[in-house]
Amino acid sequence: MSRDSSLWWHTATAPSNIAFIKYWGKRSAETQWPANDSLSMTLSEACTTTLARCLPSNEIDRFQLGDLNLASDHPKARRALAHVARLRTITGFTPPLAIVSENSFPEGRGIASSASGFAALTIACLAAWTVSPDLDHLARHGYSLTRLADLARLGSGSACRSLFGGFARWESGDAHDHQHFRQLFRADHWALADIILCGPSEKKISSTDGHVAAWSSPSFAPRLRSLPDRLRACEAAIAARRMADLGNILESEALEMHGVMESSVPPVVYLSDTTRRLLETIREYRARGGFPAWFTLDAGETIHLICESRHAPQIVTAARAFTPERMILMDRVGDGPTLELRKGPAA
Ligand code: PMV
Image (cartoon, rainbow, N blue to C red; front, side, top):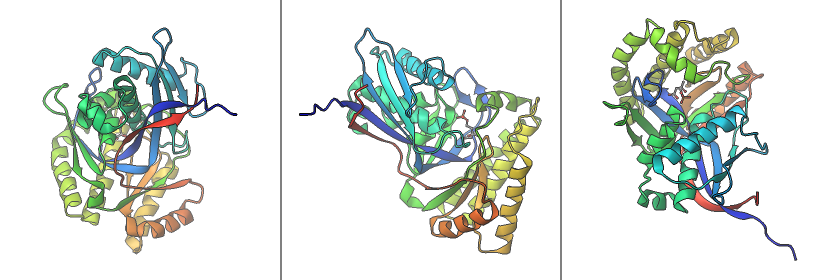
């Protein structure tokens, strides 16, 4: 008779998100206090699933990414374990943890995994420490979605928005410890798709370094002054489901952020000539008609084409034709994170 050696794990699945109004630049790097408010759409398919369980007190934290048992000095393991240590200091929980994490999307193709990764890691750690089988239970222990968002942002700023389904806003507030996180609209408010034209590789310059450089750009202060108006317009376009209005905001916002990056000292350049040509092609296709999609960009060469879901098939067909070399992923607005107890590896 075979013995089932699998174990119960606190299993958090958190989606990535794509910012419509970008978080770029921090008022304080130490406290992860952003320079401006940001707004994003939570995705559905690009997710990180993280399993956590408590270990006996004489053991040390273990972190495994996918099938790779990363050495604790591997940069990804180091960053994850540093976040676990930070959570422990803030919350006072002491048990060491075994953690296994996996992304639903391909690694190294320029799709940011830090938002989904740190959101899932934060939920899974707190669930293991509080022995919470679901998000309601975790909230009753004092870890509501907003509290979890405030903790997740300490690992990676954009992770805080992944705690909420639909469309989320992160407000920088009037002090580093008075930031606000909230869901603006649920996912069923508007069926939007994100057609992801994956960049050829992971970004060469970390967003951590880019955020610091932002202040040296002469365009940064004017950007900060004008952003509240753009944020209001973005929120209004989503509220009224006005695609062309939203699309024009998305493109101006993405190009403005890259303008700040490229005018920083030293310049932070993420876009290759090939990617710039692709952005031109997207505009040409739209101008010709039959291509109602607008681009946005993060810190890298991956292009996100935002459109209404009913148009997604035609956008994918056209994108396959004009960029056959890029891997294309189809995503859409999603409901936010989940937490459950699941049987997992015996490791
Ligand atoms: O969360 P970070 O530190 O990786 O910064 C994210 C920055 C952008 O992805 C470029 C914009 C955003 O708001 O997500």
